[in-house]
Length: 508
Image (cartoon, rainbow, N blue to C red; front, top):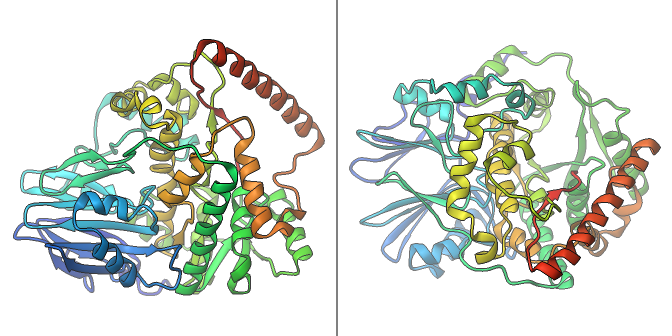
């Protein structure tokens, strides 16, 4: 097949900030000051607002779950009307979902931050002529002539089995290029100075009850699904997992407007549990479920363009991007990513477990590489007191900032050539609401089931992640052991006064 409009597909939905414009046809150009220039791909929305002595620029799209009828412009104007300073702005965008970059500019400063989980990525580099930013490290490297980092420990890691097995998960805030870094979620970049500042958490999480959390989370989820359906035609992949099930439940009010599907590829056949379970569930619900067949071949020119534009990985699921390019018909894809943060998937019952760089590297299955340990130690050093100070566990922040803030954002960027993505759980207000519920053994799955029961109870008519008998028995044995460890540790904690840390809970 002939690839249409190759010029438009290259660097699709990307941006560049630097001391000169990106020389590409059709890109929008905005001069930030005498030394900094913003270039934006035509398929990346740009919204601007001026009042209170400063300018706000949004790249991408925002969703307000409490006002699902509002447009990007109405959301930004409301935020700007209520916020008269940068500090107020940080609080004023907490409820905003979507996938966006926000630029704040006054006479003295230009500051930049991302959506809650960094789903709209920012890479940056401090150069002699000023600070440069872009959607991809490779784009910056090409513009700046940056060289690959030849650090021996880094190269050992990049060539390792663990790096490939974990789908090129990158530790810390660096990249494979010298002097090019990745903006970590919960931090903002001072674009003039090239410095990074952590801005969240701001205060201690106040515990709330399950019922309060369910009510608040349901309002945000349903409002988010209604809002994105108001904006565009939408599609939602549904598997046998919990995260896609809760989004299915949240979509009840807009279910007639959603294209529900599962995409087959070389790693997923029609006989897989993730296909058979939702197919049976939709039959029972009386709704249409689409099984997109696997493609015999992916166009090589499409792959080449995407590889030039992004950190494209060679994975079976990457075949889905070409399916979306051919058949998505300008829909927005709804994803369950970042839900794992709210469920606090990482949990450790060991009462004497020390969370350090070595533990994090092994826990995330990146092995014993010196480069990985050092990156995680550098991330940990400033926040070791955060569990006590802010009531948020280190492993939850790790999952938020170092797993989904890195690996989770890559997938959306790779899809940009074909389709825009929306993740309702990429919302700070929603994550904080769910994380504010006390975490006991099994609490998170119980919390999710209560939300589903309130939104669309019939969607629980099919099992969630069913296992064959031998795996089910093994799973039960492990859970009995883990539960025993948990309650045993509760007794130890009551005696010693020590806190809980996390273990690896179930995945979707």
